[in-house]
Image: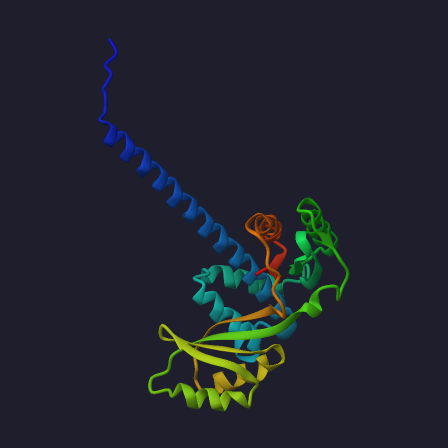
Length: 253
């Protein structure tokens, strides 16, 4: 004999809400894990390229030193970092190359795609396919890059007793355009060419560099409606799914 239990409407409603909340949290967690995996993959490739370019000793390789610190900040496991360094030292490992692709998404939005690849033929095919599937077009070198300015930025731990105004005035001589504090950390923005001198200054003055980034800032932004934005976002998401893609920049507002 089957027994049926009739639940109150509020109980059923609350159960549905809890179910949706669980699915939402699960989706967010999976997305966060996916983002972490992409960050770790990108950092691993950058570490390999840094080792091949300047050696495996962080004390003698400033780029590698910064990448290792960034990996710590991003909670990348130490074993992953060590594996990346070992792969770079190994003669059997293919060399990664930095290749930049340019094109237009739907509605005339300029896109620049930075990649790190050991197989440019595979990468360009994947990038072109993404553009084609999302109503965009892959172009040639220089097609959209001039629409962006290359910048670098540092996130630095706050030092006790530091005078931020004095620091900013001193850093102006090193090409810094903006310097401010937020939630106990110092953020420094500058032109791409100023990266080396700023890193040297920060290390010589015992600042702890937590992370660094290179960015392409659009000179002008293109305004789209919500539906058009979603079309462009599909292309961006498709490109970012590719393991060879390091960064995707665009001028959509």
